[in-house]
Length: 422
Ligand code: ZN
Image (cartoon, rainbow, N blue to C red; front, side, top):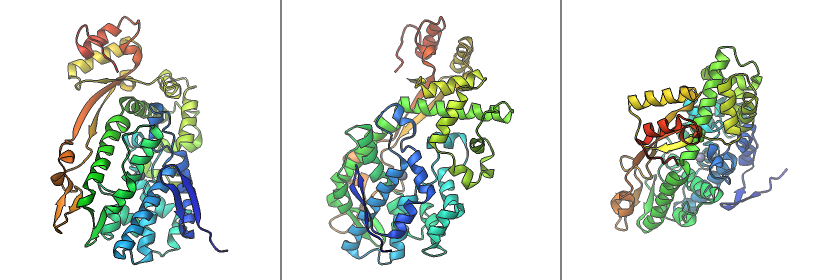
């Protein structure tokens, strides 16, 4: 049967065009469809209620952005000449996030295997996925893995997938801004794409595109400071991490009989987990597990799970990292208030780097034909010095309310007489 082009409506790009039946088959694999059940922004929906969009919509958006960049380059310079390279670029865009787990970044802090490694395994070990990739040829999956791992064999495609000016960021900044409802993530995508130029296989920014790139870098800066690193979101991640840690410890001790069998992969040594078992874990299954955990006997696990489900999140406190003495005092106070300090007090640094200067800056092609780098040409980009901030997370009941210990905790956190939880 002849394939009819599919046009999917999209809130960011208006239309996503699938004119290759093979891409349509990739989209319809179970591994890609699973991404509908993983939110793009993890726990951010607890801070920005609109942030319910999935990694599936983002993956389609990255595919569409890549398709438009390829079309622009094709008109400009004839690249890619080879339809196989075109397929590699589009498939890399579509599949770059296929290995993400539920609440991904937290998941990775609890379990040692990163989503990139799961992506690699899915492309090879998931029978359905491997079969679609092998329709192109037997080397296709390994070339794709090489591109996602930046091995250098397909330099142009690799730069388009992973660099400071890649199609992944172009889509997620616009999509995340739209769904969180913030205005500062916006930039002109069409103009940015038209500002890209190919020179000896490298993707460069034209001098005339510097202001558009500044807008894109600023969008990234604002999205990091205002959305991605929002203290309430990071506090929610900390809570998810503590739930998984506590559940894993109880399971190992044989004290978590209620765990549904498809979740047991969570607690096994991740090296022993099959791709099939990994793919069965998404946010719908994990939230179901939290519902089960909310009813278990262990008061710590049950309380943490209830806190997450009912959005009774940790209070984020922005301050300097506590000294060993302050840590000891906080732990003692937590115990006195009935909170196990291991699961109820955590600290994290959040690092903002809107632009990385060294090594992989954005290359610029000046009108006189010489090459430069964006921060050298833009005072604004130069001013975005990477920064980091420490946050402490603990139950709200420890910093506000009637408990006699609250004053003590306040004095440890802020010195006597001052109170300023966020
Ligand atoms: Zn992505």
